[in-house]
Length: 324
Image (tube, rainbow, N blue to C red):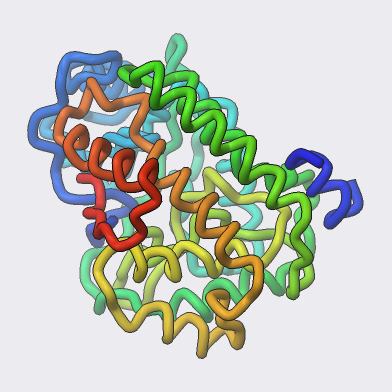
């Protein structure tokens, strides 16, 4: 069975600033499709369409999205950088509206503006910048927000089914620079993991999931952390929302976050028999996430190669560093 079969069987058919989802400023994007000059030009077009001033905007991140904070308005602009992921923008808007309807602590869309915003081939969403301040989010915070999300009634619109390897394959196909051998390996590994996924029996009931739940997707504010980044929101196994933090402690820096999340949510994903398969899915995502922008943002290249080498060799002891 493939991932679609999994869905039919089970469903019945890196660090942020206080201003929004992003990271430290990107210093020197390169010369690929999403160079600093190209992104700045796209930002200027978007701001012109919606009546905002792009002067002095700060580029925080270039991975799947290019994230800017505007200097003169409390606004965060997310431009979809990966061409293969632009279709998700409509869903992101609807999920944000759904969370707002139920008062879930989450980043809010910029009001009074039809979204997503399209300028030529480019797609963007605009958000209210979160007020600065607040303590760093914890695993307990994430547990509380996930429990709240998982308890919501289904939205009035259809969420897509969980097909976690689809975006991996899209990124591989859209890679700016990837050797033939690495491409073949990633495609083969996707097929292997897909077969393993189809045989899993989950312990928790399926439902709406955030899809990329880790502390980097919590924005600190004086009133508590906010959920952000709804690119991967779907209907799927609730175990998936507990996986990123667990894999993070194994691949990145060890923190109390996994223990706090497991305690707060009431389920330790690492003790579940299917965790090794979910870990493989998560690591495939972590390895391939920057493939569509690796030439545009050369700062990620060394880390990308480290991840590829260790993942291909099966060396689970190698520690990775969050992309900047």
